[in-house]
Image (cartoon, rainbow, N blue to C red):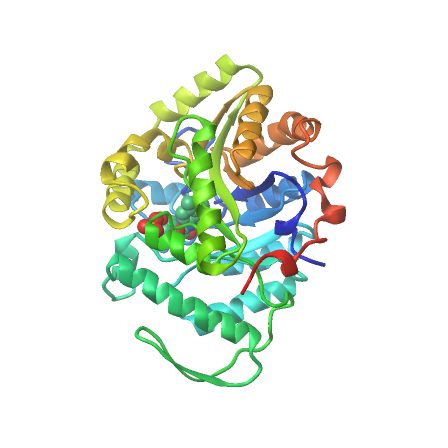
Length: 387
Ligand SMILES: Cc1cc2nc3c(=O)[nH]c(=O)nc-3n(C[C@H](O)[C@H](O)[C@H](O)COP(=O)(O)O)c2cc1C
């Protein structure tokens, strides 16, 4: 069995962020509260619709107001342990874990990843992030490195993880950031040569890292129109092919506000925004503006509504027909996959499975039933362009 991330669906789908609720910075009553039972139910809904992947985020500390701790809204489950649990509870989707290259040692990450790959029967994938959230670095007793150092360290981290996954013999590694003496890791992942890697950095250094190491990269669609994704998507693919001779998939994040009519969806969207968690949004945008080079600080501020409603993602706000129309335009612009989030995942996925999923099939973007399960694995690792 090969990884569903290489399904032949023209537009692949994932659910993002339900190990916590960081995708949304709103205080609406029905906001998702992360629980293990909730995660199991959401994973089952996503699996029923043939989603290709479930993706957690890694957050050691966030800037939400302390009063919210009581409501469970500061809870973020550990991505690797969460991935192991969902690997056991599902049979189809790829299961990701997210790892900070500067906070988690590569020897630890390589073994945990291989373990989840075994639990899942070869459905694991690793989301590698260089980090941006300074307070979590302080919590580890360290100082967050400058942006280019963070990516240089991420490169060493990735080289070590790849060797631990693929080499049987012990090896030494002498880098600027890591030293490995007689390194080895067993068990190996089931996937050969190794599990897929995703990277979501948007800066020039992030793009280069993704082009060199990742099978899936991310672009935040900065324009209001889906067609605006095309230049970024092309740039990622061109860079990977030209500089590294590799093919990469280009994904993006989107948040979904779906109702029966366009007017109802827009009204509910306004409700989400009017109930913004202002303190949390301010803190997040300030830190991203300072530490991520994906956009200027001003551009992050301009994305405020997107960070209130869902992870800075592209808005899919409307009726099922409108949402399918927007997704079709995104696919036409060269987007291979979308990670989706909702303020209320269970309600959102139920609406999606009922009204959007069949329309995506009619539009030819996804195969019927389980979204291409039958042939999901045809191309697989061999064609994913890993060097
Ligand atoms: C879909 C997506 C998921 C991400 N997940 C995380 C995460 O779990 N933890 C984290 O610290 N950063 C996460 N990031 C942030 C980036 O991976 C990256 O570290 C940050 O944007 C800084 O790098 P840059 O300057 O290259 O953009 C995520 C970004 C996106 C778009």
